[in-house]
Length: 164
Image (cartoon, rainbow, N blue to C red; front, side, top):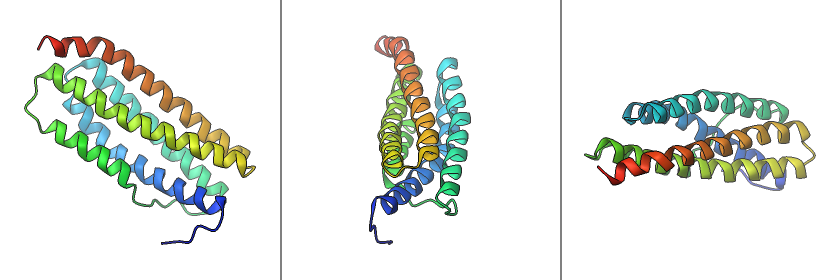
């Protein structure tokens, strides 16, 4: 465990955490896509998988700006969220109900990511790291957009679950 002496140390520590989180998500999203019965939801998960790869690449650029090798630190929060989603996928649920649950699980992940990227972008700004802040803000905007898209999908798919 490293000592956090200043905001830069905390920033690096949090970048390592979200880097590991994004790597976990790269493994979870294909499983979520496979479990989705809605073509639209499956496509949303597949699109977010591509975005997540870009998020990893951006984080690697942030590591480069910090002159630090890209290395993750176990993100227990994401591990828990993914585990919760995995338990859902093991349930014997009607397809529309499963889709509603998958959206709920995905939005929990998105909200975690939104909170993290918002914090990291602020840290980067505070540290005068404009390039890092810009990269993190780009990812933050994409995470917010994904959350909005999931909300839009839920507005129709949840009604199908009501009538299952």
